[in-house]
Image 1 (cartoon, one colour):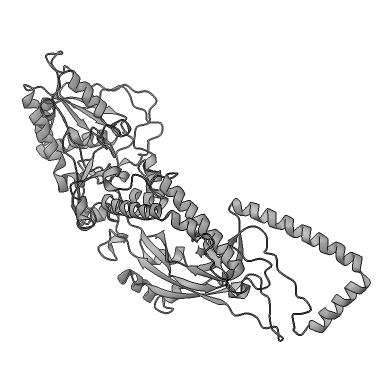
Image 2 (tube, rainbow, N blue to C red):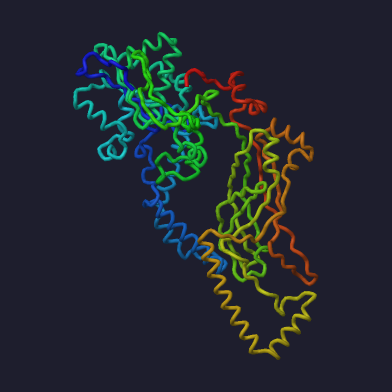
Length: 600
């Protein structure tokens, strides 16, 4: 966008102000209660100084951890067969101890990095005791990781700055940049950092230092929307007439590059499944989810709905108006929003915790021909939502009946509607299943003559008659059964590689709503809304999928008890239990959300 007429001297060099895009401003740590030694270091982006640059997937440290895990699994399989820990592969594991310690050190650094860069659940405020701010000037937009070896991999506006400087531009005189904290929404940029007020001062300084020459605003990606916000901020701050006069005087051209004028679809994916911000080789999926859902600037880039059938036409722009001069055909015009483009997090959460505990498997592996090597839990919430834990190895003692599994601490977080009543209606029940990799049903050993119960005389007589009168058939069917078992085992292992599982135990469907303050619905909702955050215990009785009665009187095995904890947490943006039920307009009117509807 340029003003008609422009500068009176076309050869005169015009000052340039750069406004970078999303993730394009370098961030530094000014204060840290997490690790004070990090103060003064670059947070975005300098993995070398922070200490987890060697943690990339496929690197030496990751390969070493994979090798250790494989060795430990092999050790456990050997131990399960001999019933003791003989340490066969212990020397091999210890040989890579130094790499393992370095891996743990870098994982700790990475966790601290995530805690520094992510925001609180309100998507606005930083974590307690952490102050992160952008590096000012062109030093904050040239290279995210300065250095001879890293500049080519982390450049932002570095090549552009070098090109401008090669034709005579000087930093701080007729060339400058306005970095910003790209994690927070624009309204917070002004209220926290006075960003738009300071940017106006920077533009005025460039203007006067360049002999009253208007400034070219060069922006990229989200920086284009930030510049647009700046123009409207000027109009609001100085008034329509004075603001337009200021823009006409100080701005020569608005040059958007890769501008998401109607939004960016990727932002929706980032809010749903997370965003690793280009660090896929270093961050895990859960860390990308934490980051993507904590950034308040991401919803600002949500795509706008277009008015179908309403097309943009060529527009005549007066000389004294700052607005784009475009001539577009067959382009749907996004409508003006009926309320400010503001997104707040209203969802509550249902947290399910699996405490560390030893779980006996004797009832689930009774009469099994082979023990499963690993198992996991599948937690069914409501009718259609199934959450699964990671796999845990099965440990065996002296025999199969002493097999156990040691569950570790795991947490499952489920996004729910803001109101407790809606949460209870959406997810009214819970069921727990035990799964092992494979397909079909596990192979079980049939009862023999040495299993004593009420039917032992009949079974013993039938077995003797079969061997006496039909020996060839018995041998033939026995051989066929062995071949069938081999084929079944191979197909099951193949299905396991594709992700198939076998359910070997499950609980009844439990209406866990009754666990909240008895059976009175109104009372439980009140407790959830007013006392959100209280952990409640739940004991789940899990029975084997295939039940084998045992003993002389054919007793049915009792279920195995699994301990769980669950918690309902209200919306992080709700100041009380009622705010989450208000509409966006009402929250704005009551001051719960602050946003200037005229600066959009």
